[in-house]
Amino acid sequence: MRFSIVTLFPEFFDSPLSCGLLSRAREKGLVHFTFINPRDYSTDRHHHVDDRPYGGGPGMVMCVDPVRRALDTIPDQVRILLLSPKGRPLTQTLAKELAKEQELVLVCGRYEGIDARLEELCTVEAVSVGDFVLNGGESGALCLIEAVSRLVPDFMGKNESADEESFSSGLLEYPHYTRPEEYEGIPVPQVLASGHHEHIARWRHQKSLEITLACRPDLLSEAALSQEDMRYLQSLDRLKLGRNLYVALVHFPVENKSGEIITTSLTNLDLHDIARVSCTYELGGYYVCTPVHDQQILAQTLVNHWRTGLGSTANPDRRAALEQVHVVSLLDDAITDIKARTGRYPKVVATSAKTGTGTFTQVKGCLEHGPVLVVLGTGHGLGPEIMVRADILLRPIRFMDSYNHLSVRSAASIMVDRLVGDVG
Ligand SMILES: C[S@@+](CC[C@H](N)C(=O)[O-])C[C@H]1O[C@@H](n2cnc3c(N)ncnc32)[C@H](O)[C@@H]1O
Image (cartoon, rainbow, N blue to C red; front, side):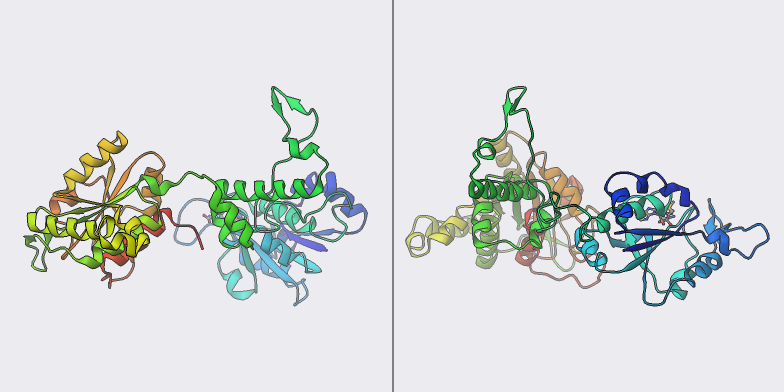
């Protein structure tokens, strides 16, 4: 594998490429490095490679011409990667893909980056090493070189293998231990000293699942999981954030289409469907808020039919869902009830199809610290008195589009899934 590195600072690579496995791989001829300095391709008398940015602002920009000339020396079929914060994230999957190439060109930007016309004139693939800004592409290129090189056959030696490492199977790796067998009273897990290969392999795989679930649950959506893996994941008593999440469906005060404050009627569909969402995602509870006495009786009658009446034996799944429902008069009653149950007042998150700037990430953050009550309106939306009192005004589900007319039960499902759903 040959890496051709386009950089203004070739000396940056001296030490990292001269130690450890990379240096051994160079000696064995498994990896080769060539450095191309755009300064050598500058036609300017002083070999300038940068200039001030058009439009003003701080810093300098790398000129397109020296970089383009440098890239003109590269054969057509070779993939050219441009290290850039806006690029495709560098993942193990990308590293595996790149390890199949014979040669890669890595273009390292400096200053404010390279004149944008480079990407119009040359076929380059932008690659990012993370959502942060480095001084230059060189340290990102080193990450890429390490990740790709160790997948080159024979790089690791026969005792070291990339097969079992983090991400190789879509999971994070299990923990490792070495001597002493006990340290500060903490013993090495017994199974690892048992010599029983099958038990050790099962323990390691289960630890991988546990660690991935705890640290990077997003990876599980792409991992190839067996039925047994699924059962194991379900058996884990993980921190269920859903328990901190409560939903309230408000029938008063809400607006009608003229903006007047009204009380809406209960609907059986909303009662059932949001209760089912609440049960599926193991939420703390679902409050149906209506100040109208008849409507409260109606709601309670429906709930009781499924909880304790004929419905409870005909459809026990529905009973479980309707057990999530609390019929209360006003939103304040829901808030008081959550305080009584949890000892804490919930963060109140108002929702709207028209307005709001709070993000789902912000609400997720609140869920880690205590109860959160997501308040959904009926009619044409929550009345202003609820909106102004809320701790967070969540932005509409499709905040970049103008048509945003979801039923409240669809909105509830989407919001709950974004907040506490499994990924994928
Ligand atoms: C100071 S940065 C320029 C950042 C640029 N002004 C911006 O805000 O996106 C200089 C160079 O470092 C490299 N770089 C910085 N952060 C990176 C990242 N997260 N991944 C890959 N390359 C990065 C790029 O080559 C970039 O052109």
